Image (cartoon, rainbow, N blue to C red):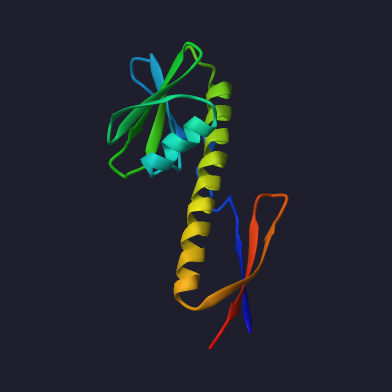
Length: 147
């Protein structure tokens, strides 16, 4: 008997419309874009893998820079980070940056889940029979169930 699992990096669905993701500040000097990211260590790693330095302000806030543009990330009461952009940043560019960051973040979650799954499967007596990496970055794992 065997079990097949597929780990897909697009495991987090963004069900919000773009309009719902963007919130303008009342002074119109900044605007916020809601993200799907909750784990600060993965957010920071995603930013670094995107090629930017990350400066942790505190447990709920960090910032990064792309050229002369600073982007702040602040964690809301719901635990989800939002990105704060200066109004001089074109919204199209900001949304593209966040979309790319989401992709990297989802891939990091997939990798973390993959490592935990392999560890727990081994502890439960499951033997990894095959592993297949797909072009879409998904991973097909086949485990042999020994009784």
